[in-house]
Image 1: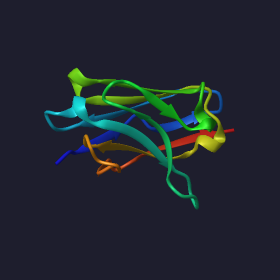
Image 2: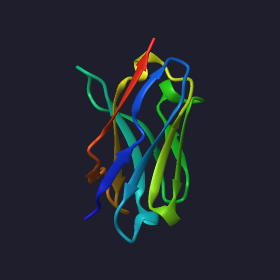
Image 3: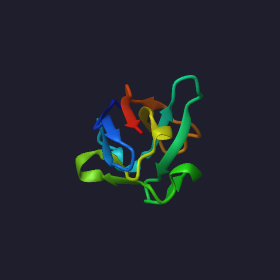
Amino acid sequence: QVQLVESGGGLVQAGGSLRLSCAASGRTFSSYYMGWYRQAPGKQRELVAHMSSGGSTYYTDSVKGRFAISRDNAKNTVYLQMNSLKPEDTAVYYCAAREPGRMSFDYWGQGTQVTVSS
């Protein structure tokens, strides 16, 4: 069982930056596929970015060049650096973990609110 705890959300003006953190329990964090999702009011949850255990990354088009996912395996933590924030980035952001060999994310954090004012 993996527990994920997000932090770092808040209110920021458009053009500003935030860094989200997700601390994970478990001794095999380095083998997990980690991802960040977000859900805006009235919208479906969408994948923002993910990172494999080997460090390869994926970003949804709307955040490319602005967001960066990274991980520190020594700290069992994954980060999402968000720059040049836009009002449309406003959402609850969720951290997710996927075990090796699995096709879907199995573990989810409780979410952290990000609000970008115009």
